[in-house]
Length: 260
Image (cartoon, rainbow, N blue to C red; front, side, top):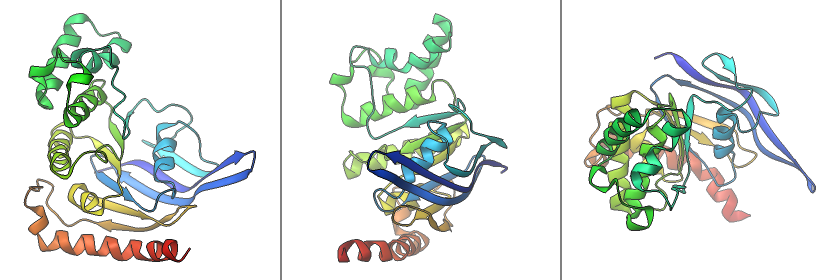
């Protein structure tokens, strides 16, 4: 795999009326093409800031942010971004929501229909294309949002706690579907989560952030097969060992927060 994303001593400071807010500092991270990297750390440590910088929503205050060898100087159209909220348009059906990026891209009606049908089948919503967001369960809404994200074929997916609001069973189902889809489509993933079990279950590598202003404290390789069975992976000794290591890496900040 070749390097696709590079943060080199990247920092971000926001200037506010109350003074500067240092969100992140000296971020050094490279992500290879086709790699699944999870980001964990305390709230406010700069994980979402990192996604925003690679998306081109705002530039770093210091250091470099490169995508495919070039500095990110504006909106990065090679990435797709999904947050905790699905942001589905309530007046549009599932088919209409998935089609939004295709309409913006100027695809023909026939191309839109074919792509929408293909993506709906991929996420298990082919029977619900005429349904509206208010008629869908939480998991189905997430599937629709994921299909819409994939509609314009971004090379990289930036996912900011996309499954945080789901119950444990739905979350595992969505994790399984996400891994299957991204492996089939060979996507690169940066995935923010507060769930350390999720961070290990999904990742090829996991970056651990310190308390804000956040920097990367450790990067752990996850020695699990890429075609892992997420229903059974929790019985794997390597899985238990890696979740334990993540807790150990997070412990200083957890203890510090409690003391504070």
